[in-house]
Structure formats: C-alpha cells, structure tokens
Image (tube, rainbow, N blue to C red; front, side, top):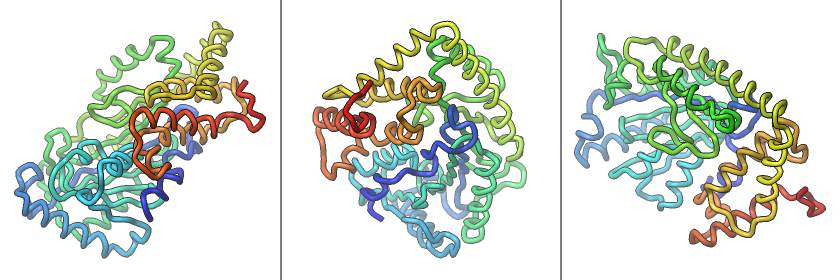
Length: 355
C-alpha cells in the first residue's frame, strides 16, 4: 500500500467510537526494547545501526501472525512522507529527524507500529480508539511475545529491560491517553489539573508527545517512570487518573452550558463559520477552531457533523496530509488555500448554508 492510499483512510485511533470518545481520543501503550548483542543506538556505529535494522526487519518479516504490515525504510522516504507518518502518530518526530538506517513497521489498519533505531533499537506501540488501556495492553503484550521469540532482548535480572534512557529502565513501558480538554482550557482550570498530576508522577505532553506543543486543546497523559513498577501497576496508574480528568472536563462543560450558554454557542458558531467560509487558513488556526467545533458537536450545539469527521479533519488538514491527499508538493501559502477548501468540502452542508 502506498502512503497516498493510507492518507485517504481513517486509522484505528481516529475512529471516535471507543469508550469515553467524546473526551478521550485514543489510548496508546509503547514498549522500549533493545537487542542484547548490540550497543544502544547512540553508542552504535553506522555499520552496527545498519546491522540492527537489517536483521530486525528480516526477522519481523518471518512472524507469521504479522500478515498485514508494511516495512518502510526512512532513508528512502522524503521529508513529506516522514512528516506524514508523524502526523499519523505512527512514529515520533525524533525518528523522523534522526540519522542512519532507520525503519518503521506499520500495521495497515494502524493498530500498531514498530520503530527500529529510534532512541532504542525497538519502540513498539499499540493504539486504540477511546479509553481502552486493557485492550491496548493485551495487544502489545502479544506483539512483544511474538517479537521476543525471534529476537534476544537486553535484560537484567535486577533492573529488568535495559533502555537508552534511565526513565524507561524496568518494564520499558509508557502508557498514554490523548484527551481533548477545551472546557478546562476555557475555564482556566487546566493548570490546576496539571499541578495535581505532577504530584503523582503523571506527565502531561502535547499532541505529538514529548517536547511537542499543546495544540487544539489536546493533551497526552502518561506515566513518568517505569523502574520498580510492574506493567499492571503502570497501566492502572493511568487508568485510575484519566476518569478523574474526564469528570473535571465534563463539569467544566456543564458549567459553560449552565452559566454562559449564549457565549459558548456564539464561540462555537463563530469557529464553525470561519472554518466554513475562510479562503485560507493555517494549521494552528484550524486546530484551534476545530477544537471548539468538536466540543460544540459533543454538547449538541452543532448537529449536522459526526465526531469521526472532526477527528479526521484534525489529522487530514496537517501539512503532510494535505500534500499526500493532493498528490504534489504545496508551498505554505498554497497549503493554507487547499486547507480551507478541504475543510469546506467536509463541513459545509450540501445546500451551501454554513449556519
């Protein structure tokens, strides 16, 4: 499958049909693993990185259960293709910007991906729509077992799985949930939530993970440390805290509806109007206004749009996606024009009336 074909699809985590999907976009679990016979990536020579990539790709292709995958070598992809995979959440920005022999293995239904030669030799990740960490853990545990039958992991009897970053040593597990929290932002309660999370060793990151900006009122909540904790404990830590954040967001939405419904409806309607009528619009503006519209749809203020459509637009209007969908390179100015056109083709009712 070509990436252009993937661009036209809606991946697993974009379905918008999982538990608590009005607020929880996706659940993700990632495992960091290294091969016993090689140095960590940053200590490995160019030749060793090539050996790691080649041998791992070859062994992955022999896993009989992995029938619906595509193996992509990053050195053969251009900048737009690499950015596309980042926007799709199939690999990290660090992976896209790295050097040397690197690959990403993607499940064509986008339920999982495996990065080879990122910070660690292997970064395995699984994604589910909505709040469904038990299903994500069950799936990634199975994938990890299938890989371990083919590869020899670096493991210490005392410390557990050995990783390039000390914060990942032990289980190598990162549990993340992506939340849409516009009401907490509007009511200025979001910082209070952040402070309370820091006290229990839960990290808050942006749309594209560590080091990324907070955009579109999207926040990733994840565990900070893994050493000394079991996989079940780490999954439960995030599983227990997320419902509290969901409840805070619901209360904030109820407050806005009860105390300032006219202002809220006006804000949502203005955002919808701009998206339906703008002749050009940037990525940042699009995320900002789509966030308001998404909340408006969930609160019943806009009834003509499905949440799945809004979720898709969050990703399909990003720079690399627009270029893949249009089939050619676009300058920033041209992307802003194409983005406005693409939004209107999905948001404006058939009668042409955006109100």
